[in-house]
Length: 320
Image 1 (cartoon, rainbow, N blue to C red):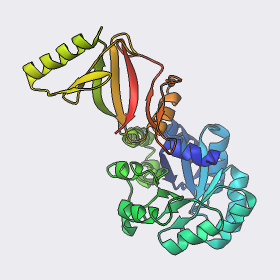
Image 2 (image 1 turned 90 degrees about the horizontal axis):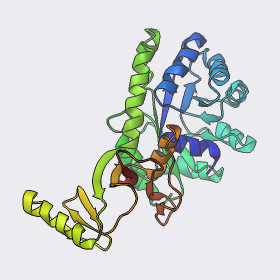
Image 3 (image 1 turned 90 degrees about the vertical axis):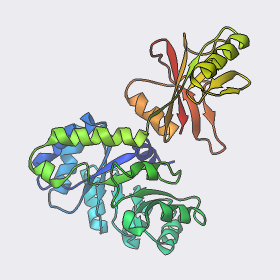
């Protein structure tokens, strides 16, 4: 995958920003980064866009910047010159898409029909903006597209928000979601950058979809494992499910047949996408343990252990 699209995938969330003044750019950039955002799209809807991208690029080189609402090749050149690393267009404009493809500039042309998808594919483009997402049938439409166009991924935009983004990001053909709900014009006009950061943190965590799955307890042997699982069933009614390496009591308690990772055992955390969650935690200084990865047929992570313990328990991520 192109490195720009890989970064967009790992981010999961791409705020679409419309700035009335370039003076808003730097404080907004700080608010985005404080909120855990690593990718942003600055729309070319206002005269402030070009200078805003320049200031953001100079002040926050770690923030991957794109230019949105690009409708001409002249805007493509201006956006790239100002520091944009990818281009987003509202619809499928063959001139803009073809120009970007020829120049090797990553582009997300807007599509919402099979004909537009096929035009994009003719140019070798397989990562597309799905717009307007909710008005075009949402996730059900994307699932319908996946049949004939299995090699295409999407960034849905339009009606996406913190409440419905999990439904999109749970689908393997969705690279990330994009929207303006994190940077509402009224918040920027009022200088409410603290609220922008709060909304970003909320959305980033929603994009991870972290949930508690189970706790695994290290036991000295299989007999102790089964005994404790049966005690949980007798006391609390959690049914025992016997396995090759462990015994479960209900869905929340796993008793290992022999000591495994972690001083005391492990904690399993579910997430929408293990690869994306691992990238998110890496940004927080927590890596993964080599040799603990379990992948599906497509190469995506289904399970991996982190390289840090919490309270004497190893932690592993698993797909929800």
